[in-house]
Image 1 (cartoon, helix red, strand yellow):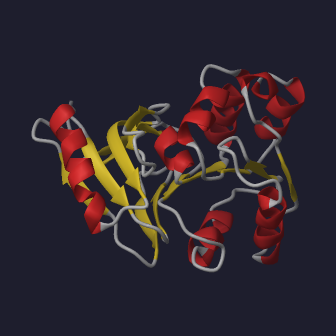
Image 2 (cartoon, one colour; image 1 turned 45 degrees about the vertical axis):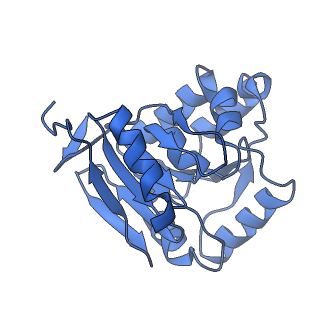
Length: 227
């Protein structure tokens, strides 16, 4: 594990970028930084597994290409069957930047968890790829996440940020939900990530905030940064 201050995250040669939410015209600074963090000119990959609209992937590729990213492709993973497709596994393993779009977090988790495509994402990250999680993707990367969808509550992610619970689309009105989640899980560190903000974690212990908004950090009453 890589550690800087109270944060720990999965060790790899790439970057982990957790975005709270936003639109192309408001996240451009984050997107430019993610492209600059790429280690080479390998393709970018967009993953619509959280249930993005059909044309969203194409819009993403056009947006990133306009910002100077290498050419890329949409990896058509929508369920566990497509997540076990060897072609999709290969596409992810070869990508220099992998972007998980927002949407239904549970759908994303159900599609990827325990599949070879998630192993491919991990291998790409270990080799230097940038892994970006927008909203639902941010929850998936953390150990836990507080969904902004009514009635969903707290979801268990992949644990690439252990002992961390994230709340994307964070606003003051959602602070109570994050605090309540920390009461139930007092050993965690809470991160409230608003729209147009991203937490960027680098291979050499870099902890950066990208974007135009501030991230809220809340320590659970039993959080131990050394534990």
